[in-house]
Image (cartoon, rainbow, N blue to C red):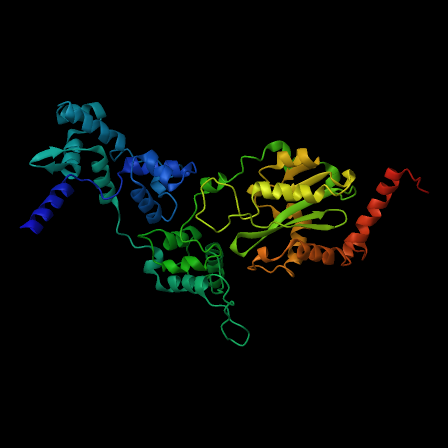
Length: 458
């Protein structure tokens, strides 16, 4: 009797038409909030649903809003009742208006209102209850088409797509190749992108129109539940390896608040680009395992390199991480600022003109750095490492000494200085086979003579 009573209770609750997920209005508010760049928690709070339901909506849609909730979605045809009309119906019913009066006010036939109540209203304890959110959910559920996707219907097309997403890389001897395990092992695959697959199909099958599909359809088959004709694990074969898509507005909000237009690379003096005037530097961090890092500074004219020792601070790893607390990893904003100031202040003022960095949070205290050292800091555009080409090339050379995946915290200041000295003593083709140290010395000689008052000969 207890089990039967529970089942009848669930049936009664289900008859109210309450969906197991949010109604259309809540979903629309949720996806609009996601489109502005809010997190799942923030979007769920704004839509008035729980975080669990918000996470369920996000994962079910693969991280992207369904087409009917996108800003570019076409308006609903006037043939169907809209959510706003359903809200009006609910209000007018509460006020006691007849079906004909409701139809007259909405500009609809009374039979349309009658069918709407028969199909989408709910009953509880013998009484009719019409709610706009529940009615909209019933209408959306009824409008869903059980139409199988193209990949589900076309076996040859699905096999072609899967083979190019997950094909293993093979050596000329036809032996399969696997990357050595380091950290999280991820097998090597052919890694054709969905756009490459869609673009290649007309070349491989010029006369077969059934072998055509858009790259967006492939992405949806990977990410969106209900359209998953492809195995979900194939998403890890994509170059990003993501299991969910990232809303574009969320990635746009990653811009750093400490970066303003007047310190962007576009405002950097023109003399920096031609490398004729020394004293302009490029900087970055090379990262290692366990949140370790080493800072790099490269002078654009001479390619002279200085390395920043960034040891971990006291208390690192001794307890749980404190939210909004100081960074103890050694490459927080304060630690990087102090390391740059301590290193670059040893140079003459003529060699401290500008520093170009990417928009990493480690440079959040650039204003204090400019006050302490007198060097002007400029920032590259997002995702534009070529704007620090000299530094990127130097970081590649440094990987000979500090390989990727290594723990960089094991090196002390003397070892890092030894690596910098080794790099500065290597002849460079771009310097006419001089070393960076020799090129810098040639620039420092006139500066030293000027300070001592010794006249130079023509």
